[in-house]
Structures are given as C-alpha cells and as structure tokens.
Image (cartoon, rainbow, N blue to C red; front, side, top):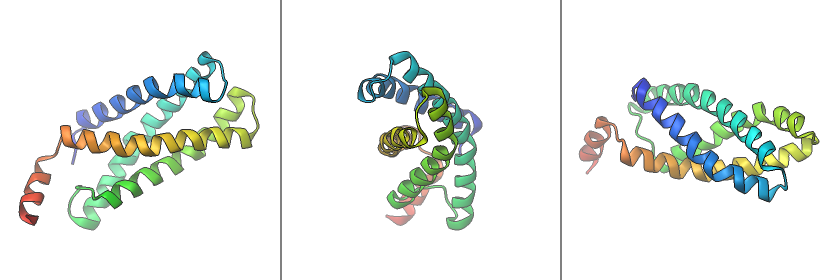
Length: 146
C-alpha cells in the first residue's frame, strides 16, 4: 500500500498538472472567460483531490482484499478511472451549472467533456506515476510471474 505522503504527492501532482492543461483549453473550447473557467477548474480540482485521496485508499483496500495485491492490470486501471469519474460527475454537475449560470444539460455536456479528458489523463498519469514511483511488492509479483 502507498504511504500517506505518496498519496498526497500523487493527488496534488495529478491536479496541478491537469489544471495547467485544462483551464486554458476549457476556456477556449467552451467560450468561457479564463477567470470563470479557472474558478470551475480550481473548485473541481479541490473536490477531485479530496475524492481522489479517499477513493484511492478504498479502491486499493478492495483490490488487495480481492486479489492479494494492489498491482493494477490495464483493465483494472480502466475500471478505476471510470468509477472515479462517475463519482466526481455527481458532485460537480450542480456546482458547474450554478457557477456558470448554465442549464444542467449544458453543465452535463461540459462535465462530460472534462470527464473524457480526465479519463485519458488519469490513465496516462497513473501509468507514468506508477512507473516513476513503483511499490516494492510489484517487482516481487512481476518476478514471480516471469
């Protein structure tokens, strides 16, 4: 299992890099002032970070209980990202509609676009993160399966 420090480093680096990418792109794509999309991005990132911290602990505990390891296959990584984004969508939809003064449908479309970005981003980020910061147990498991 990852340490508290490692989980915090993961969550913060995930959100900071995402904000650098998504705020300017989202403002242009949705024709929303940069400041307004920045607020949506920062509030969303804050809520996502809190959700990320709790969700990843619960996911890893469940994965370890079910499989005996926290090593994630590609299919488990896809499931991990889909469930994470579905939970976040339920929280962010009302906020986005309220803050931008748009309909729930328009907020849903915007949120789905963000979720699509984050699905790909989450998969790539976590693959790179796990490569840069592997857990010792993974090398043991991979050596046993080779």
